Length: 122
Image 1 (cartoon, rainbow, N blue to C red):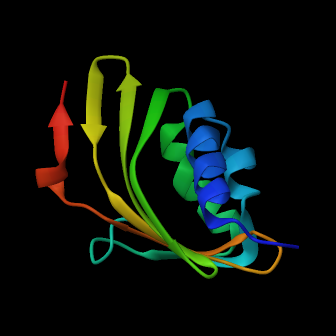
Image 2 (tube, helix red, strand yellow; image 1 turned 90 degrees about the vertical axis):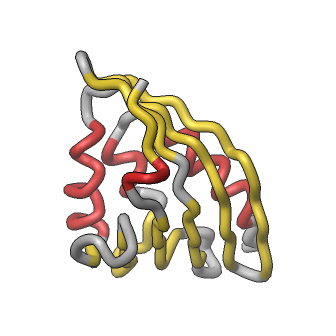
């Protein structure tokens, strides 16, 4: 299989915007790791733990926008905006994420770089 990191990133952002936790988790390899934000919490290891991480967005209205993308080999780095509308709370966060993909196009590692300075309450 030819891996196209740009297409995988776009599929990831579209899937996150759909709010379906199982579909997002299915983009990851079984033994993948997720750190979001880097340095600010635990590293989630394995698809089940990663699905648990995405439970936080369940039920929210979400939109994503790819702002910048760089790819090389089986890796990508990208800046995007995610807008989350959860009842009374509406915010926009602009993280930079890095991803590594396996030969099947599954995400094996995801790291999100952001802090409260990258968050805007709307």
